[in-house]
Length: 319
Image (cartoon, rainbow, N blue to C red; front, side, top):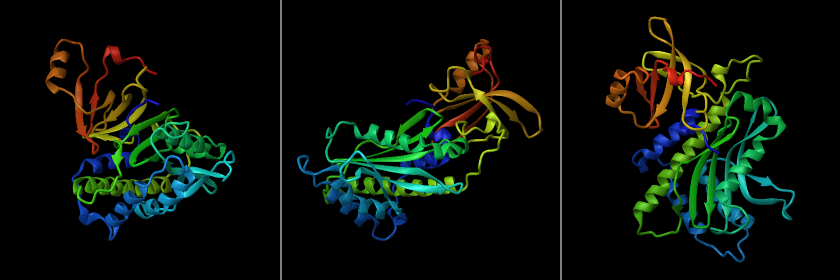
């Protein structure tokens, strides 16, 4: 499940990653938010691997998650279990009349190592199963199906995100955050509040993202396919994506594109997204005739930069 960073392909995930990097600001939290987080920590600290079933744990933690995320969580039914439900829930959104799409999936696990599957991987499969339904085919053509993934594994919480392009591409946004309650550890409580507030904002952004989607045109061009980057500008250039560079789609985000400048002139370019790029090194290699010429770079809100360059011979083959 490798591919271009989700922050390049999904703007709500880009905003989420940017918010996580910001300094926490308790004044932004709604009234009672910190108290809800501490109550969740208290309930999550109650673990009995021998008797605490996943569905029981879900019922204990789900009300708190609903308060924190400000959304209604729906149990995911599993006809193979005796209770009809397992230790996971979701947020769904109806779209295009009748399609119900998962935009957030929560996995509850009693303890690390409990059960037959690794929780962070199991929650990905749950999201993939939901999007594999035939009724979601039209929505898959209109978007890259971003889903926020939350795992509550014993006394730990982890947040990831997945997009389907069409292969699943998963990025982990947080490490395993401890939920064990220690009222004297203000730094850990503050970080957990910040992560969960950012997660709440991301859930709202995803709902807005899906609500604004339009049905795909019958003959939509490859330049607007959902697995292309959402960023359409780089400085003064308007970008129209053409294709992935050969053999780079699941390695690094590099694309063949057309760039239209302020003078209206269209140029064939290569667009690359990166966190680090040495201008001095690029200039030196270009002087030696071994590298493409950079036309323009522009910072993105998630900490990366987009680079628009003229094509070079070794980037000339297209996918």
